[in-house]
Amino acid sequence: MNTESTAPHVPLSILDLVPLSEGMTMRDAITASMDTVRAADRLGYERYWFAEHHNTHNLASSATALLIDRAASLTERIRVGSGGIMLPNHAPLRVVEDFGTLIQFHGDRIDLGLGRAPGTDPVTAQFLARTSAEPAAFLQAVEQMRLWSSATPPQGLRVSADVAEGTEIPMWILGSTTNGAELAAQLGMPFAVASHFAPFQYLQALDRYRRTFQADAETAQIAAPRTMVGVNLVIAETDEEAQRQFSTLLQMFASVVTGARQPLQPPRTEAELATILDPAVRAKADQSLSIRAVGSPQSVVAQLERIVAATHADELILTAYTFDPADRVRGLELLADAWGARG
Image (tube, rainbow, N blue to C red; front, side, top):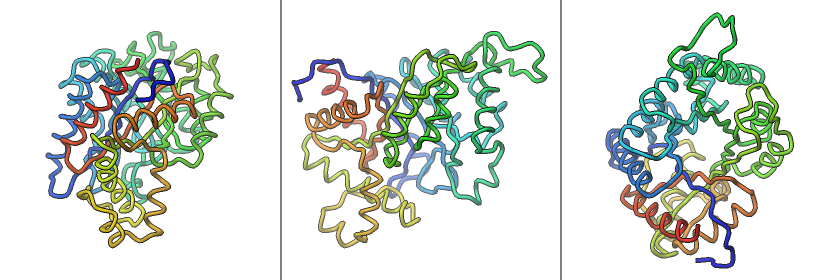
């Protein structure tokens, strides 16, 4: 383990798209994710977020609020939330009522991460569309949700969200570009950057967010900028085994590039990858996955420390996909031991 730095480590969290491995059913994938969130709770991870995707045959993360409810019911300590609710697919009133209800169920362990992308293809997005993704409309929707969940809603609101009133739902803005960063800054809210799949503007986005943050915004939730950075994680007992398991994630992203979106595939050797992945496709997938930590516990800790140093992140949120769900849980155990041993 890197012993040069003595600063405490930032909190680690998990982002889950509830992926299916080859041969799995949707129920199998959901069960595996619930096993993982229980492990994350036991191991001391900060939060566990579920993404939202639709018409994606290899992911079971379409009913995000239901996954959050189930995960929160199975855990005791960890924060559970959305990474994120894709607001163009929803009416803001329904979102705030859902998350207000989740807080009524589970207390102050619920997060509402919000994004502007639809999380699906254009045709499916048309079936889901409820809120414009335009920045002005997004800002207005978030501001309205903050008012509905406020402890002291303004007088004269024509519509109330009584189940959410007073819950002050903790909200995050998700984004991958400077546009999303500016929205988070304008709202005075925490910002999570999707560098785990869109690494092309993430440093600029973090800088823009911090420089333009408005603590005096009417909707401000925090007094100073707070950032979370997405990182792909593959960790195993040895560097060699982690690299072997990384081939599953590489194949997953290659299938996104080609539009095949196949279930998670078993790990492959370099020779096998050369026969099944077009070099140009592999290069694109590898580029999308460039913000990653892959290796043994010692190697991963060093890589994560470098990411924190480069980004000044207040927290890291990790995507950790393996063909065998047991390897994912084992990896989280290895990382919790290695990361927590220095704090």
